[in-house]
Length: 381
Image 1: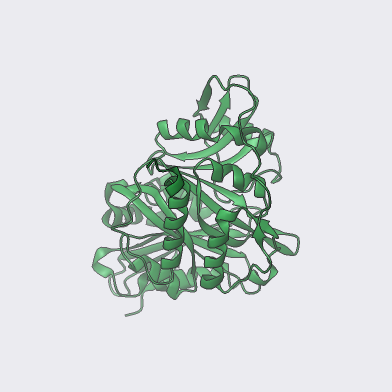
Image 2: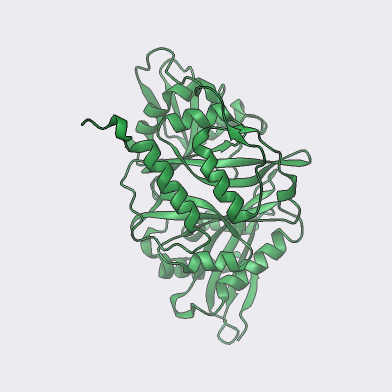
């Protein structure tokens, strides 16, 4: 029996909270399924689309999914896919995902939609893959749901977007295997891309850093962020709003980040006056965020910004995913790399990986070993 699919409304909030509790238990770290006020805001957001599925006979709400967009951006996030345990394997998740993509991608409202899917089972990967999403990489230890879980990054692009990518000529050598992996998985090309010549830019701190303060006052941080970055210049991190600020006592730089304590993860968004000001202090920044509860820290870096990529790589970050054609720039699109660092032990033994995602996992394991394991010449005889 075909489900009834409709746009979610305020009258559905109580049933939706029950649905997310039934699917994820009390540990779901996303406001979409737990915070009534945030849920109502998303339902009313003209840049987003939230759909629910109901049984044709009983009218019971049995499934939910949304594409979250934002003003001024042409990228969306597929999130909150949930199907009641009693109605799984009925095609509900696929039907909702297909309807969302038809409403947001096929109509030209967005250039791409991405999804971070769980890897505790192969089901979520199959759902998005059946709806045209392709794997972009692995995010190890990305979220805390009862225990640390790795997520897979998938995306679907509107027609013609991938063909308008702005080419790059060189990248840090550790990124070349990821580019080759993406070529095989996505059918895109990086012709002529070479390893950057010469040593990586120095990132040693310029002067002592006596203390790094973490300001966790979301409203204040948002106001200051808007003052520092009144336009979109100088930062790009779709669907993330900073809620913490890190700065030394002398105020020589300000690091803006989004910290999710419930999920135990953090995204580094941008730096004032510019990223180079904090490039030599990534280690103390990372330690401060880890003390605040972030077991996973990630950064989104343009593939064309060799210096920024080198700075993160030199501080133990590893590139696990590549998002081609992520940001529009005139008639073209820029590619981005997702780099991450985890302060907790990474264990892939319980991960369920579908064949299209496997090359990314293999690539990450090799990159992590190169970054964190000693070479034979470094091992004492």
